[in-house]
Amino acid sequence: MASKKYILLAGILCLLFSSAFSQAPVRSYEDSSVIPSKRMPQYTEFMAGTNNFPAKPRNQWEIGLKAGMFRISGDVASEMNLGLGLHVRKAFGYVFSMRLEYMYGWGSGLDWTANQNTAKNVAWQGPTVATRYSAPYRAPNGTVISTMAGVGGSPAAPFDIVYYNYKAKVQDLSLQGIITLNNIRFHKAKTGFNFYGFGGLGVTVYETKINALNGSAKYAFNGISGSVYENRKDTKNAIKDLLDDSWETAAESQGNRRPKMGSNTLKPSGTIGAGMAFKLNNRWNLALEDRLTIVKDDLLDGQRWAENPWGDASLTADYDSYNFLSLGINYNIGSKAVEPLWWLNPLDYAYAEIRNPKLMKIPKPVLPDSDGDGVTDQFDREQTPANCPVDTHGVSRDTDGDGVPDCKDKELVTPTYCQPVDADGVGKCPVPCPTCEGCPDLCKGGQPGGCSEKLGMLPSISFKEGSNVLSKDAEAVLASVAGRMRNNPECKVVVIGYCASDKKQQQMSWDHVNKVITYLVEKEGISADRFIFNYGQEGGDCNTVDLRAASEGEEGPNTVAPPHPNLRKK
View (cartoon, rainbow, N blue to C red):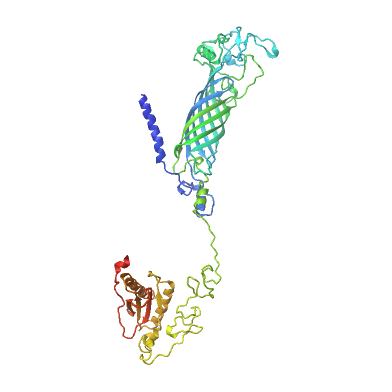
């Protein structure tokens, strides 16, 4: 039988600790699935950056079961007994939560000092006349006396000896407010330990019985009194040996003057306490707590008067209380919700935004640009006149290189042989030769009036070293070439690339020529058959492509297969 208990206990422990590893992580404040519908407007504003505060997520409820030591504090010396409790708890913020708790406790007590009570507590007045005390009696302070001094020192009559005892069943239902004291952490994301204090109001229902009769007669307690019993333990053992287990007499109560629940007395009560919880995982935690409940009644222990053997009438009644020290197991319930807020650190969001901001509004930078050319003064190499196009360094563009910026050049592309130019960028071209014999350099394009004269000196296109990408400046130059070709549809253009000492240079020279022709065909709409493809020539810059008007009758292919295509792919 014992082995089955151990197997069951081991199974429960395995279930608790396995759930610690299978539990899904806590969802963040950015997860819309944990935001209730009534807070979705705030969530939407927060995600859009128009609200600084995230919406409070839906959080789980806690249910708990506890057991521990229950003890009543009253006029009769009490003993420790069992108490049980059950609660449900809900957070209303990261610090404040409330719980509804039910508690059931069994209380008992046995007074080891003798008392005179027949006149003050009718529950101890049995059906027969009690034996009067006459033998020597040891008072609680150790003094042996045979007569009792009355008020003012006058002798008093002998008295009946009783030893107070009781058993009580106590239940309460209370609503408590709980303040969490340590979940706001400045140097740690979370805590596995939670300390809290609580207080609340409720109602207490109790029923108390006393063991006053031995059968139908009162107990003869006088046989216990005297110097034979020197200490509390011996006295209590003697009383227990005398008492039976009948608990037949209802203790004094408030009667019908106060509210009842069945035959039990119902009284308002107040509860205060503190506790600490130890987190096992996101669902389970253990809690150790102590609560004190004060009841607006002095009869939980069946005795209203705190009397002594001298029958001091100046002693008055006060309210009884009870204490419940418990150890409990708590479980969080609820889906699509974060764990209870008292386990979360509300500073998580603030610290996360400080360290790694996800939404930051940065004002648009204002950088000085004195000439308004779009290049800030920090990088601008020239203060350019208004409306003059510039390159990336803020320098005015000069497409034909004649020293006159494009914004002032009335002849955007002036052939080299027509330079120098005047202040408007217009060149002075020499009169063509009647034949090519006297001036061959001017008549490479053929006889006067040929394509060389019509198209003029065509510009060169430069590439960055190792690159086959046309710059914006190069595209502008090619646009001017295309314009001349449209005006002279009968003319062809030779596109020349340089360098062929190795496979890499040969392929790059082909790529450059092909890039220029492709751009003029696809972007500018010039027919492909108006170009002569010429690459791998000597005597030029490897990163430059030259263009010239084709001589009369000059022919050549407008497309050539790449020399080393696999090398190009690599």
